[in-house]
Amino acid sequence: MNRYIDLIQQTFDFPTQEFSVDNNELFFNGVNLMEIIETYGTPLKLTYLPKISQSIQNAKRYFNTAIAEHEYKGKYTYCYCTKSSHFNFVVEEALKNDIHLETSSTFDIPLVRKLYEKGKIRKDTFIICNGYKRELYKQYISELLNDGFVNCVPILDNIEEIDYYLEHVKVPFQVGIRIAADEEPKFGFYTSRLGVRYNDIIRLYEEKIKDHPLVSLKMLHFFINSGIRDTAYYWSELTRFIQKYVDLKKVAPTLDTMDIGGGWPIKTNVFFDYDYQYMADQIVKNIKWMCAKNNTTEPNIFTEFGSYTVGESGAVLYSILDEKLQNDKELWYMIDGSFITQLPDSWGMNQKYIMLAVNNWDETYHNISLGGLTCDSMDYYNSEAHQFNIYLPKITKGKPQYIGFFHTGAYQESLGGYGGIQHCLIPAPKHVLIDRDEDGNVTHRLFASDQTEESMMKTLGY
Image (cartoon, rainbow, N blue to C red; front, side):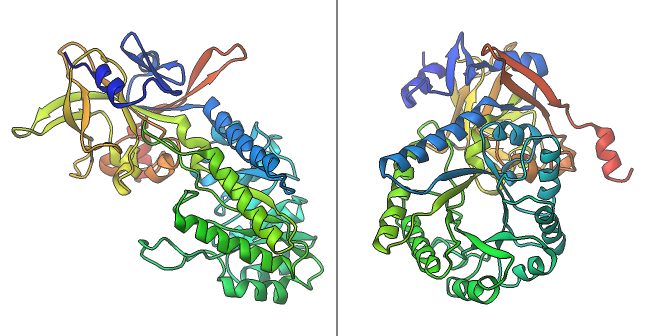
């Protein structure tokens, strides 16, 4: 008999650091998911908070190991990219690890204010302010600077942005400049719409920053959409960026920091193969080599990891409501949720996640497709990252089947419109927070209940 557990063990190197099975039930980071389902029901989203701190500490270790190995003179600073998940339980867990923050838009700044009021950050915490900024965003940044947030660093996205700060900031402050990197060859545009053109950066410094008594240039900022990957494209763009830093440093003595952005990948399949330590080593090695070649002081290195920070902490659990054979070979399992509304990246970007059965691992399996609750024909999930088919245990009468999608912790709530109106008025599922106490015992609590019809009717004006 070909059981589901046999399929998984033969296909993957299983169990893994995150996943194990005991008594035919799946454990996620040592948490018995059936116990969570029996307590709260489905559909539900969960966040395993200790994973956030674990990821941060791993990244710090990778970069600090590389810095020590190469006798690199600069320091490493970890920033959390808040747009990946703005929830307070995420940001506050991240801040337990002596990190700093990167913002993307106007209402990030009231979030920063709240964190300061609660004692979660200090006025010397780095607040790296990215994005194309409308006037209110620039106003809030200026107010932070005037209120003594000495390491709030607006990252200039265009030549004119600094004019607002020069007019409204009354204390000495620092700025950074974002470089407009070239996009991947397969992208629809040649150069990123964000940032300042390479050819304009030195002119921007010399005309608007160099001789002004209050402003100094702190940082050169770099980000590419494909993330930090071991590809010819990434290393080519990074080398070009380092060269611009070297050139700019010759005329800008206060420049001492290189922000290489975010984009460390997370595990979206059990076959995941990415050598974080190697990539940190190569980044540090390349920066050191090019600085030495040009007689330039080695810069401090900042990263802005978002998905890497929070992605692997998240999961979504569903019940299988029914099975439907729609023709001779297409068998559907209908879930009690929606991919379009609850895992929008799986629909909008064809993003694949780790998908596993939660229970019934001793049952035989078969090939199925997963269907969501909306009336949209695109509300489905029918392939894995490593193959074109999905396999799950066969449903037996009287034995409910549960499944989980894992490492879903970044972006899905904000893209899905958390607490708002979603496709076909599918309600947002409950959200459960899982932690461990001082003795290592699993604890859990309900952060948010299922979205109610009353809240939807109010939003819709009824």
